[in-house]
Image 1 (cartoon, rainbow, N blue to C red):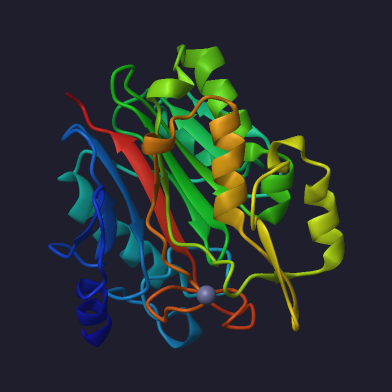
Image 2: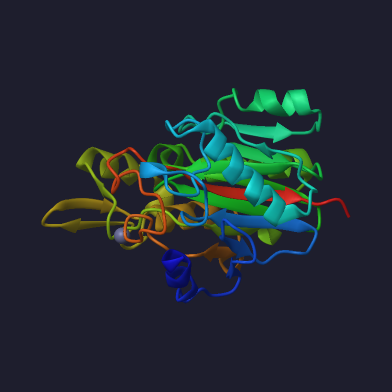
Length: 281
Ligand SMILES: [Zn+2]
């Protein structure tokens, strides 16, 4: 697997490492052993054509059987059968958070139809996921309170502060303190490649949290480029997330062919998965 070899050569820094014990391989986030968290990449799956190979989304035109096999392989690799299923929501580029408080399989299956871009849970045995191919995936962990969340952040969600909403909801529902929350930012399109219209930059100019922050966008001869990570970091710092607890893997999906990239692949492509779950103690 040449792509796995490339991934091995990545200079990953703590708290990220490559878990290549399982197929598909994924970027693992360091967390207590009772918590599984990571970001899948492109190699090591069963999908073909533009979805090759570890596409995790049923919504992009790939063969269902292949996606089911990819998800099953991940679940087997991650959890020694502790996670019966993966729970995702219908991502809508909004700022709605959904809290999973019930492990009833029928209720969990229904969540796939519910529009939300952040999923939270304190239930062991529930693996939460968001699907991305350029958008920024966030994983949030409070190991002490045993609460986890996963967030899908595109520029629209960022503009509506979905990450901040999630931190607020974690506090409201589970008394999680922002100061002790660990946040992991996965592979996403970087400021090197994320060209946007000036109207998008103008929307963010209204955000007071960006006042005084340097280079949250860049202007080049070819146009404007937005830095999702820098903006996300500023928003989360403003609500109390500690700088040392915001961990960035810093891999641009557009630049690396071991990631799916919606823009690079002209919209016909697969999705990688950001996942987090509590194992039974
Ligand atoms: Zn790039």
